[in-house]
Image 1 (tube, rainbow over the protein chains, first blue to last red):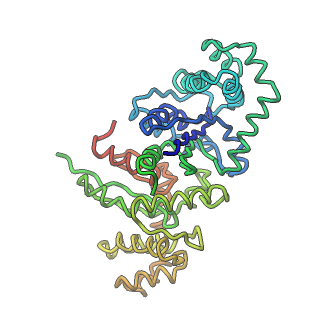
Image 2 (image 1 turned 90 degrees about the horizontal axis):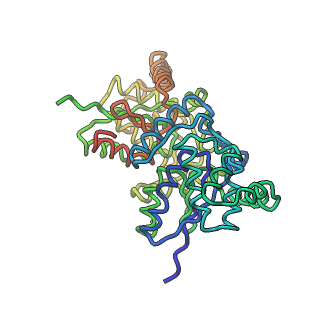
Image 3 (image 1 turned 135 degrees about the vertical axis):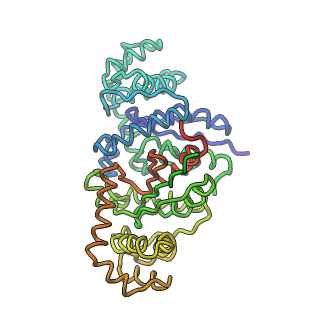
Length: 202
Length: 202
């Protein structure tokens, strides 16, 4: 039997629905003998191409989103606290992830989960590089090395490439799941992703 | 026991996801001893307030939407053909619905389902009043009376009121379900609506 490909999990660290998916995706993958390739990217960079607008861009949408995310989290039994600063720019957190993926791959996914939790459970402003560095340091990651990496052209370029890849593959939302080339947008599609994994598609 | 309130089903006749929900919602309601209050409205009128943009507003989004809607319809075993003219203005179809609701209530919901099918299965341009009148006539509805109604200030005003109600209640997407005051946006939330109906909420 051919080796099963990983589920690609694209998300923006500023996305509540990305956070929801992040708490579920590894379990879903495991249930179906898959791994997950975590792919943080910058939704803002993609929205220039897709013409999308942030959730918080209208009072009407923001109000629905808050109710909906809280209800979604209650259903899954996960904590959610609407961050005061929202949305934030996830450049530092995303760069940190790709540096870790290269230099301490075992820690990259844990780091991403902790960043999400810091933002959506503890209300920390993960848009601030200092906050990102503190999170990393508490995980035993070399703070000074990471600080340097955040300004390293190689890492900057790596994140840019990832965002370009998102645009070129038509990935314009968060979370965004790719299963064997099939694209699914939204935390509200996890049930469909599971159905797809179970049946092999339809 | 208190009488169960109807499920409100808000939709735009131009919305593929509204069409998907329209094929499912009556069965879901029946399974839980509910009725459905069909509420066609004009998403365009609401988007002025919500800052939303039509699905077809960017090539990237439109491409995903087509794939996704077709996949969704295959899953539910319903036909879908992307209409050539998309989106269309649903003023005539929506006015016709509210006139029927007043004058031939038994036919209003059937009419809505037939209009959706004419657009998304048969590719008819339901944005044209003539097409809407033809559909109605084939259902045994008085064509001349309906034609007059489409220009009647009372009916025009009725649809305007419905759209105002959507805005004032924060309803900015299609389909939009309201269950006992709880709002759910999207065909991809039907599973959550069912969960809500089953459990009484969480």
